[in-house]
Amino acid sequence: MSNKLIDGKAIAAAIKKEIAKEVATLIDADKKAPHLAAVLVGNDPASETYVASKERACKEVGITSTTYRLAEKTSEKELVEIIEFLNNDPDVDGFIVQLPLPSHLNSDKILEHIHPSKDVDGFHPLNIGRMQLGLPCYLPATPYGVVELLKRSKVEIDGKHCVVLGRSNIVGTPLSILLSRKSNYGNATVTLCHSRTRDLNTIIQQADILIAAIGQPEFVKGDMLKKDVVVVDVGIHRIPDASNEKGYRLTGDVDFESVKEVVSKITPVPGGVGPMTIVSLLQNTLSASQKKIY
Ligand code: GUN
Image (cartoon, rainbow, N blue to C red; front, top):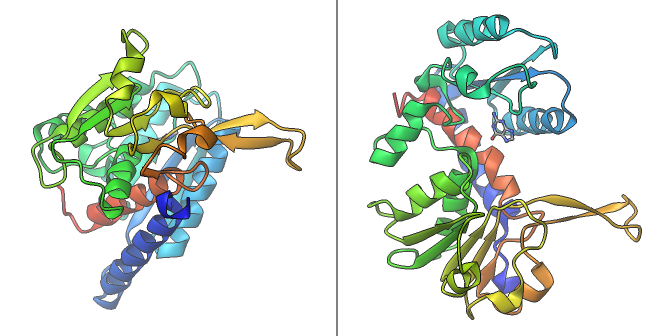
């Protein structure tokens, strides 16, 4: 089994080492350390956890991080003022506005205020358009992480049938673009499936590579799959489990126990895609400080 596992933790650790080395080279050349800022509005516990992990990861590689914590009741005008401030702060290379925002704020409208050259989340419409056109841009963290994971695990995707489950703006849709584009790691034939897809099981059965990003715990079962498929599980869910000392266990969109028998490779949850996401943000921040994209 262990040779089937795609070890996201180990791959993420290797990439972090590469980033730390590049940051050290910048410092040795008397350049400033890359600087990532995060804006957190309100007290969403999951967002607090994400932002804390981002701060920790930055520290590990020598990237400076600053978090702007704003009250839940922050107005659109106040938030836009902070964004404008960060857009114009020469010390900040890139920043993110942590999502979800409180319900009185329209995140699509807010994200458009981030200057594309500092949009290290890759959520600005200009970066999404540039990705679609194959132009230099910041790639959104999870899709970028999935592509790196496949590439570094030497999974051949050229000409293969990749089935993506889920068409979200931050995972499924950008992944469908990245995997199918004409580039040196692309050229897959992609089927993007969603809640209205007919004959889903027939399509899943045809996958050489299956990416599960639908947000339903253990949706994908072993008997749905072609032998030797590569499975990437983007989901993460807490399932109540009295036998576990934490009172819950973590699982993905894939039923690991039945699926592991059929696959040639699989990403576990936890320890697969998750660790890659933050690393992608660090890569984007490093690229921003080196002015590699804009
Ligand atoms: N909330 C959950 N994931 C993300 C992410 O990648 N970026 C931002 N800004 N918010 C998130």
